Length: 431
Image 1 (spheres, rainbow, N blue to C red):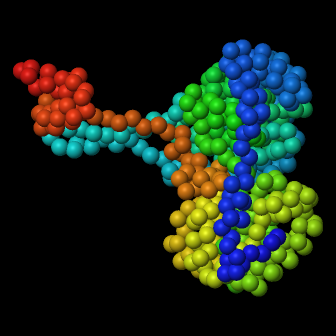
Image 2: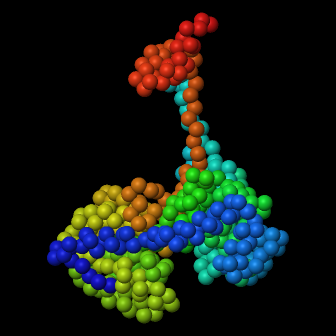
Image 3: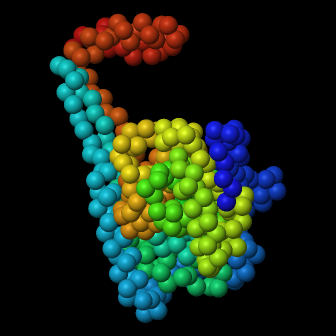
């Protein structure tokens, strides 16, 4: 990892390059996705099966596209009990955390003759996309499904590509633990299109959540408006602010935990200790040599990894806020004091014993987080992501009389005569 000194160099350009590293849909990708989505919308199941065979190299028929109860039982038979128990513990913690986010409807008597309120209702149907193939992320199943269940979503539909014709058993177990009843063995842009528009075999949903490759992300962007989506997530990233009290081996391990995701992952350390910077660099190299995914991690670190030495922690916090990282670790002596300076981050991990991985898997807060600087205005996936709200208004004649003139004046300013007439006609009519 390269070491940059903010007192000797302008690090702004390099950090901006790293933040903006995310994949963007090329014209070629956009054209492919458009064809897939449009054909699935027009043709339904035949197009879904055709694209599944083309891209996943598996020929499915409509009888076997949906996961059966027997396949769920078989998944448990092939799983290790300790791993299943770990998923159950994670599910429990995720559920408890998201239960605390629940909102309720409210109605308020604002004044005589005026009642206002907010009606909170769950989205009726949600589609969850889960990456397949070489990827196996049961934790993402839990993180996307459980908040929807807590919110009260009536129907959950899960799609996951199955290049071999079968899904990873832990994906199926996580879905079962979370309460998903409908699981389909399709992926890619065709799965997004099928959930967005519906086919004879797959129900139409109202919102689609879950990570995916550039084709999936582009398809989600394409169908947005037909359905709601969670976010367009980019490559994973971690930023660690550390002082002299940090253990170099801990910091190095945490940086590598993101670098191993993929070649576009970002791993940044900002510290006011030059000694720590040197020690972490050495430790990263040592740990990297024994990592199974070392080639991926090495490429990520070479392109999008850096250690920045600052004059103090205040400067470190300023740089972090400008980056707005997905994961932010405060590996400092007094993390809660530094927290007061943090304005932008997806998830914040405080202290030397709170690695990012505990948030990915077991703690409870959601690991579906804004990336690429979007934590400046986006929030993590939450129970609220699966709720919709309706405003409630109730006026008596007396309540309306008090605001009648004001409404008509504003309508006149805007040149909307019929708006004003809705008030005037009521005021002129005697009860």
